[in-house]
Image (cartoon, rainbow over all chains, first blue to last red; front, side, top):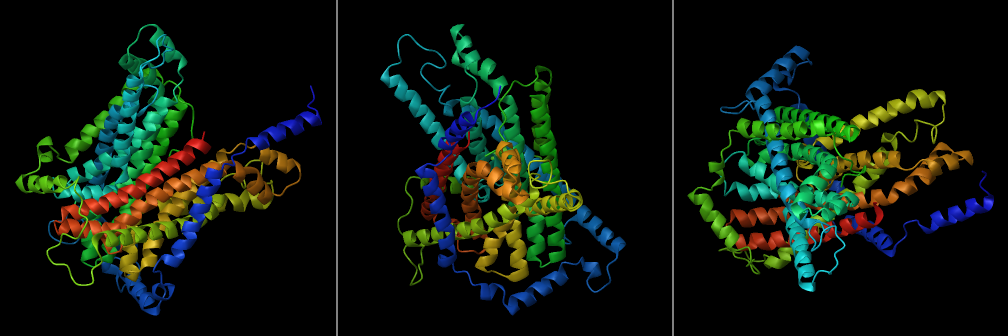
Length: 317
Length: 291
């Protein structure tokens, strides 16, 4: 069967009519562009200062100090550099009582893993109350008697409050959360774990609630018809259906947790950032850059593991 | 936030329990490795005192300065807070403008659409040798840009150049540019190929096909994602205040160090209000344009 020119034209016209072109999109785009342009006028940026010769000289000195200490005025020697790198992995910053680089890297990893597991568990508590289809007076059922106005408003209130809590949890940057918690909980790792867990509970809670709302309702309506309770529907009907998405988001947020965990040590907590900060304070820029690069390896490794896991999840589901 | 959406389908039952158990075991390992105990979570006396005084002010943020000694010429608290907020937004917006340019430029080279497969790229000798090399190099470059956290870029720039507002902007723009490039390239590669093939058939060149066949379909997604990243940039910009920049993080740190907890809440609420606003805004954009 051949498509006539007329049909094609009608189809193209229909597609054209469906293009996104709302005033809201245009306003958002315009606002954003204006804000970015304005920032260059209202900021106290001084390119003449940033690119001045004084800064240039500073940079040259810095570039020289980035070379590993034993090779400062020597020609490059891989074996010396490797020995030096081994010492950094073994004993961290060259100073008394510093934890080793490798130890700190594994600690950073552990912080990120524990934080994302806690956040995922907490988000599984929140997400049901933030999903409009589950947190409703009559979930998945065309009821004979429509729910009373009070019950409708009650459930709307539950959704609203849960969403507000989730927004507030994710609105604070992890670094500021860790800084505030640090003064109250005097352990070297808990503040970092809690800060990451709190922020990511807010994000995962929202994402998982969205997944719950997008679940195919037909099987759930059937379950409801059989007399299943709300909890049963969630456990038997929704949880298996959202699991792939749940895992995708879990690994996606874990990646960012590794990145953030690296940094939180700067506050004095038990991660790579502690070594980076100690080296910087002592002006040992060679060691500082070494630990930053160690962090890069950790983050890239995390990205790789996460990408593999997400691909496996996609393939399995 | 996760850009590539696949429909949720049931997970195979055989592996489901094993996967979830593995994640819990990983959590247990981390708990043991960090030598944590739930007892440590209960603050000691000093911590309890600080927590009590801090949370006691949650519903009564300061409206005027609470410091014992206020140097002459210090702006009123709310003015100082809003000025710091302005700087926070300015740094974030300036960084986003740079990272969007970086993201669009590098995102082009990091996508497979401009060289691999038929829709866009031809099968010339150059296309078979040089293009994959440029693609690979770009991927490595954006991977490196992304894997150094913005705070660490800031620490590096502080050591290399000293404190200048522009280096705060660059510190945010580099990792964000890498992230935008990665996500943009994936969005472009996942855009439907139909229009691109049609343009190709009409005789359009590779570049034309890329910009008129693929980008328009991916544009709403890219917009929504850029908005979401702006919200992240606001948080990053606030955090840079802890490193000497005049953003709201510095106000928070100074007030907290001076135990003026009411002031801390004022700054926190000011920052939260803006972030919640942009969170809502980017959520609306996502809801309307990302199916």
